[in-house]
Length: 397
Image (cartoon, rainbow, N blue to C red; front, top):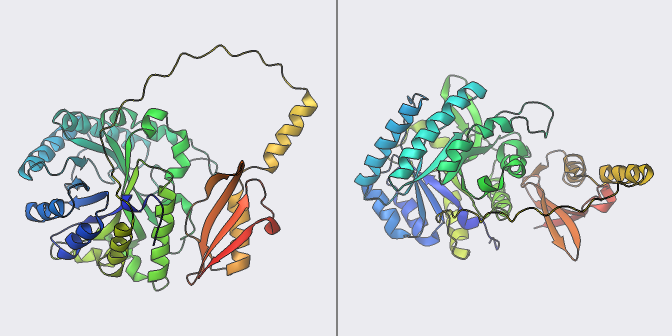
């Protein structure tokens, strides 16, 4: 069982009145649960099963025009639906995977700002963004952030809204690719403090193999791949929840449960009802209570800056030595951990989590989980010690 913060915030997403989902929510009481095109009867069951679970709603409309007026009109539809549902759902998403590329994202952000302004004025909590996995796209050298300018287009909407939502998926043949499934860690440090103070939701999380050849609207799901076994999927979720423990304002909704009887059969390959939902239920139930989405309080204004004391520049030789030292001890997990993992587990090794940093005894340590599909291994080292013989291997049975 998981024993760290984060698992309660690793919720799920449901489509229809499936009693298995209601029982899982009642037993586990996750911090969040997302409902798509919510049905009033089923929604009441979910709310009664776990009154403190934050319910997030989404109305599906793939014909939205990305204009401010369309954003206000869509907010009116959401407000009407929320009132019909008895105001049980306070959190509502705006658009969903509606734009890629800077110009389209600019129009999307104008839509989202108008949507958030109207929804918030009616007393509901808007979640803006709705970016698909890998969007905004990488532009420029690897691990650089020039694409942050596309995130910055969303800032006016983010300042109005209570939170932000986006999607993250593992690619089935790149389970160690941390760009798609852990990309929030890449742009999180670049966000201003007020943005990190918002509530953040991975509104779809799972395994997506991309569109099928004969139907671009139908995607391969985790059930289509023999190598994504119960153990592999369990450890993917385990690693993600462990990483989420470092971000207390982040929650996620695993895609997707409650398919019967309303869902398009195309999404059957993503269905988590069965052992995945049972696993989540057990982990939710074993974890202490946790909430997500309380009203966001504005941070106190920063104190006036003190006049810094002038610091004499160090001698050139000392500065040069310090610069080389910082290069030597720099963050280099892309090469060190993967090489060590493949040496221990073989060429099929893949990462189950991003790198996690923690302090112990005045020392900064780095850990990461890896697997070959059969066993789980933790790699552990001291920051800056990236030689193979300096990385400790801890095997889990």
